[in-house]
Length: 191
Image (tube, rainbow, N blue to C red; front, side, top):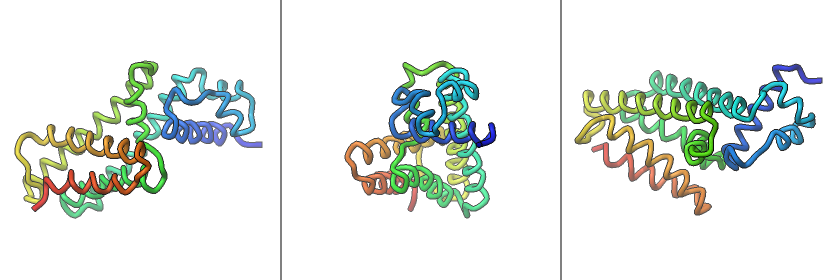
């Protein structure tokens, strides 16, 4: 028999996959329970409401993403290289795993999300925009990124381009189009 922590982790992992594939409104506790082989009440034991579960999934996803961002800062030789590694995070989801960014999916459903889930999705975007803004600022300072306007504007443009590239690739069943869009977006910042 699985330990409680293992069951909770499996619930989170399955819910994340379902949100990334079908959206927040595309699954139920019953779907998760059936996949694990437990009763729906057992899912409720760990997460009282779907909003609680969705917020926990988004918080976990965002925390893992922040860990990757920290790793990029350590591994990225310069701002340009950090930006390339950042694109790789989104590429891995859509091209390698066939999934969307979890918070991008949540953002698309924002009007129907419980407040606690929406707030976690907003935090994800806020953290990403701050991180990207710092990358653009350092790129302007070290000369590896060239742009006019504010670093905040280019952070928003880059994040929107990547989220949009994921949608475009998915809707057209063409993962390679993500690479084409991302390369075009990055080319505007490099020499």
